[in-house]
Length: 127
Ligand SMILES: [Cu+2]
Image (tube, rainbow, N blue to C red; front, top):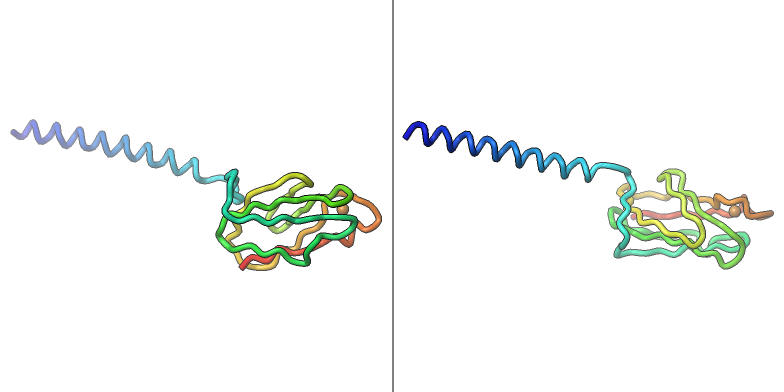
């Protein structure tokens, strides 16, 4: 009787160890870069760039929600860089970001596109 109980306890202990190992394995996969990179997102904004402006003065994003940011060029070649987030997206490209901190994030064109390059800036408003 005593021996059987002991065996069961040992088996249980082994099981707990295995489960704990699996659990920590999953966790390490979740940690990583601050910007999440799923391929789909419920929200999307399209930033249209031309020589030498972005089509809106501000683009709105909901905080904590995955949002796909696409950059299209109507003329010239441009890109955006959101320095506070470490995000860079070139024309024809997109990136899914989840921004947790509400605020106003300024971004600039990060490609030397010509005479009006320095005027190319806009904001992403997270609320
Ligand atoms: Cu530029």
